[in-house]
Image (cartoon, rainbow, N blue to C red; front, side):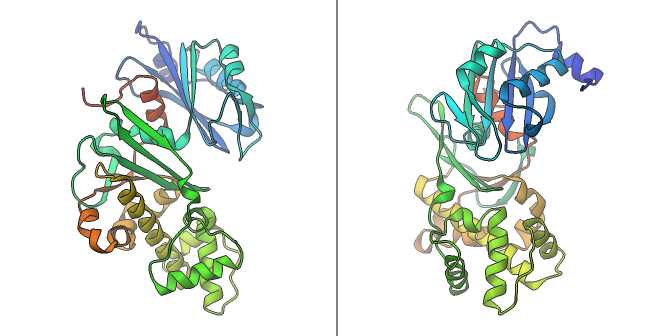
Length: 340
C-alpha cells in the first residue's frame, strides 16, 4: 500500500478551514489525482495510479484518498472520453461507470466530469509565464478566443471563448477527426499514399503517435523503400538524432501539418488570444526543435492573404505540469494563478 511522504500528508491534512477539493486527469493508462484548497490554491499531493490496477474510477479515487488521508467535498475529473449523459465508457481502457453512482459512493457533494481537452482549455487563464514556451507570433489579445490542440494517442482539440457576461467557456469537439489538407505536392503524394490504407484521412491520421508512423511508412513507400516496423518514439528519436532521412522528413512533415491544422483553426475561431500546443509527443520533440528546425510556425502562417493576420497570433508550447488538473480546478471555481 502506498505510504504518503510526510510532506504529502502534512499538505493533505492542513489545518486550513477551507474545504478540500479533488481534481483528476484520467487517461487510458494512468489516472492522476491531486487536491486543491482555497480560492486560488494550486494542485498539491499529486499521485499517479495505473488504471489497470483498479476496476473503475471510484476504486482509484478511494485508493488515492486513503493514501493521502483526505476527504474532499467535491471533485472535477478530466477524462479521455466523450461526456454524454450519466454513463461513461472509456475507449482506451476497461472503465465503465455511472457518474451519479460514483458521486454517491465517494460521498461527494458534487462530481463534475469533463473531457480532457475541455479541461486543458479551462487551464489557459491559470497559466503563468513560466508555464508557456513561445513558438512565435505577437502578443495575445485579452478576452479573445483561444485554440488548444495536442498530438498524443490521437489529436485533441478544444477552444476557449469568453461569454458576454465575462465567463470563460470551453468548447470541446472532435476537431482531430476533420479532414486534413495538403499544402504542397509532397504532402499531396503522402496523402494519396495514406489513402491506400484509410478511406478517410483525418488530421489525427497524420498528426498523432500513429500519424508519425503513418507518415514514415508513406514516405518510405514513395521513395521505393520497404518501411521498417518503427514505433512513433523510434521515428522521433532517429529524426532528432539525424540518423534516418525518412524519419527526419516524417517528423518535419508532422510538425508542418500540425502548424497547418492549427492555422486553420485559428482562422476559423479568430483565436487572437493565442494557440496553445500540448501533449506528450511535443514534449519529447522539444521546444528547440519546434522553433529552430521544424516548419510548424511557417505552415501556421502560410494562409495566403491572411498570413499577416496569423503572424500576429501567438503560439505556445504548454510546459506547465499537469495542466488538465489546473483546468479541473478552474471548473470547480478555484482560480490558481488567474489574475483577479
